Amino acid sequence: MIVITGAAGFIGYNVLKSLRGLYNIVAVDNNVERLIEKGHKGITYLSVEDSYLWLEFNAPAIEYVIHLGARTDTMEQDEEVFNRLNFNYSKFIWNFCYEEGVPLIYASSAAVYGDGTWAFSEKTKEMDLKPLNPYGWSKLKFDMWVLNQEEQPPFWAGLRFFNVYGQHEDHKGKMASVVYHLYNQIKETGGVKLFRSHKNECEDGEQMRDFIHIKDIVNVIFNFVMTDKESGIYNLGTGNARSYNDLARAVFKSLGIKKNISYIDTPIEIRDSYQYFTEAEMDKLTKMGYRKNFTSLEEGIDLYIKHLENENS
Image 1 (cartoon, one colour):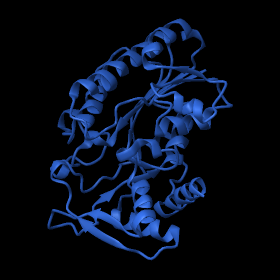
Image 2 (cartoon, helix red, strand yellow):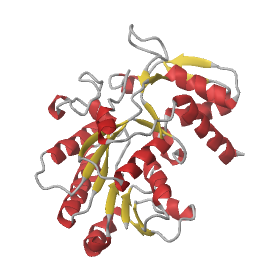
Image 3 (cartoon, helix red, strand yellow):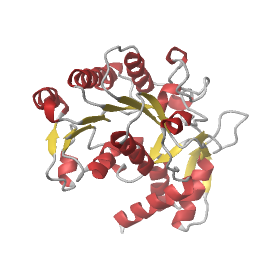
C-alpha cells in the first residue's frame, strides 16, 4: 500500500495514475472530490485531518509514503498557512515514517534557491540560500529541519521540483504552468504576452527556466520507489534552461499558428522576487543511477498541447 498526499493535485494525480494497478493507493487530500469525479474507484480517500489517526492505525500495511501535499501558491503571504501545511504536517509525515520504518519521498522545490546567486545545486549550504517568497522559505525550512534529523526513515528523498508542466494541471488556476496559460491566451486572442525584462543584460522574453514535463517527474518518482538508492535531497529538472521565447514559439508551432509574441511589464508586486534564470544541477540524480533521458521542451509541449486539444475537442 502506498500513501500519496496531495493526490488530487497536479503532480500527485499524475503519480497516482502511474502507480494505480501496481499498488493499493491511499489518497490524502482535502479535495478528494476531484478524484472521485474522475472515476477513480477502489482507492481509500482521506482528508488531511483524518490522515493523522488513519496512518497510525494502518501503519503495518503501508509500504511507502509519497508526500506531495502542500500549499504551493507563490503569491500567498500568510506564513502561518505555510507553517501549518508545509512544515508541521510534513514533520508529522517524517516522524511517522521514521517510527514505522516506511520509506518516504517528499516534495521540496527549486524555490529554495531564490535568485540562484549560489547556483542551483544540492551541494549549496542551506544557510546560504535566500528564497524570494514565503512558499520558498517554507520548503527550505523543512529541508533544513530534515537535514538536522538523526532519526530518519529507512530511505528518504526530498525532490526539488523545477518548472513542471503537463496534463491535469488545469485546476491550479493562476498557479498552473506558463505553457497552460500561453495555450489559453493563444486560443482566446491569437497571441501571447510575456513579461518584459527589467534587467539590461537580459532581452525581453529571454528570461530562462528549467521546464520539465510531468512524465519525467513521474518516471523519477517511480524509479525511486522501485530501486535501491541513497537518501538525500535531489534536484528534479532537466538540467537545460530554456527561454520563455523558446517556450512560446514551441506552443505556436505545436498549434500550427503563426508566432505572435508581445511583451508587458512584470507586475510591480512580483518584480523584486522574479527569477531570471533557473537550471537544475542534475549530477546527483545521475550518480544515483538514473539513466532515462528527459523530454525536450519541444517534444514535451507537443505532447501537452495534443492532450489539451483532445480535451477541448
